[in-house]
Length: 483
Image (cartoon, rainbow, N blue to C red; front, side):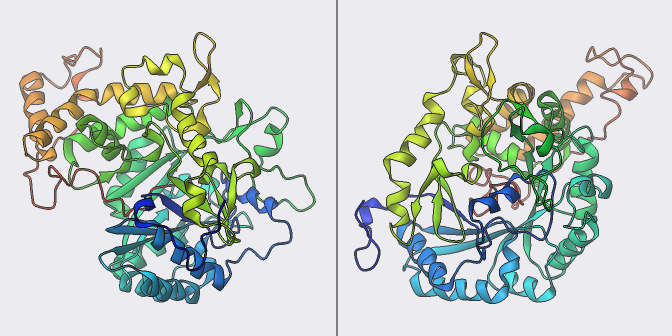
């Protein structure tokens, strides 16, 4: 490859949209979350300081801003725990952004954090620079603290809640990233209502935990991915056909999404934004995929390590998916390399025939390649581990999604689906006694089924979803399992 560093910049015609998730501390984190596979990536750089150097920070910001066509460019930070770099590092990042930002572009800053290091000074900085913060919180205290612990095994819930209150007090925009795992998957409404009502967030991401391992690695992996003194520590790579004890069950994942969707679609459309539901609605209206995992191909979301190494994806930070180093080759050339293009198209080209004929392929496209390690019913490899859950979910939401898509195509508001569904419910169930069998055919008493949920109809307001505001802005810390 020709080196395009220095004055030989990319041509305007070569600019393209892609997302870089930068990890200034690499895998280093102050927590020891048991399901965090990324903790093990420390083993890729033995003896390293795991701090992004200032000259590399400048190179990264310059190359990123050079590479993107705009008008909005996202600068995204993750880890490990990026706040361990300290505020001065991010102040310099703002200075470099101001230096290299092209006329006619805007720069949106995002950061994913566990929140335990946040202070009023951090929050003032986030507010000043209009950061969107992704805060990791796995639900109520007993669910969050099951796996999200510090290096001493101590719970972190109180510190994370303190971070949420600090950001609210300082007017910092943030969303919640909740991993769905064996410890909380059977409590969907408890998790959702806690985030909505007690935390007070309006933006929620649900990320399923799938820890893929080999039979030989399983006993060690079940202990977690952090350092364990002199004990053997496995390096997480995308190999094997088994999963850890913490991994979410596929069918339970579907039930989790279905239960939350049913509450959301009857009372929260337009006031609470769930990334998974936004992405699904994008598919039903024929818009581009709202999440990379549901796109037909991938390869437009890369991961930058602390030393400048660029990898094909945050979930594929391993030697065979190393594209190169941005100190030596411009990131735009690395993203446009044959290796990365092949990585992206492999998602589509390797899709099993079973998936190609699936009725919900348009919304799923086989989900993330990292989870495709099962076999189809006829023995073809490449079926997604979460297939049963996604098939249940996308089938379950089809009718209300079609209703919302139709509203949007007619220039109406998506939240008008709520009074429509309420009216249908009233027509079907209005005369049913609480102790009668529910007319839906479930076999349950009405009070235990459709008569047990309160449905509130809401009038459309300007802040609610409209024909162009359905899918949340790309200015979101959507991707990646926070370490």
